[in-house]
Image (tube, rainbow, N blue to C red):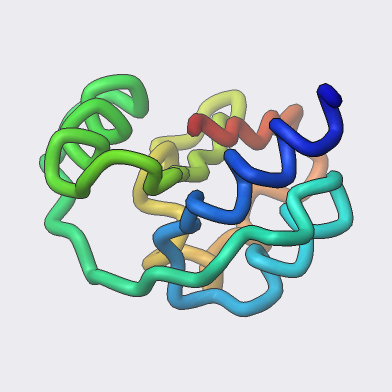
Length: 102
């Protein structure tokens, strides 16, 4: 019974992303019925928590939003990871943590 309720719930859920690989990652985590919903949402220049809260208020119910940030010791990357991937080599050897907020 739990499985059928979960399947019913996830069949209504969508993931807001333009990255098909992210959708496949979520499906591997057990959300096989998840659909793709792709709307480019504006992001405030703010903390990761404020960014995900802003994104969540811009979409409807049953739509999962996610945001990834990269915290590097001595670096200022954070939520701007998408635009700074080509310059990450300057942080080689530094401690880094990826954060994914849903």
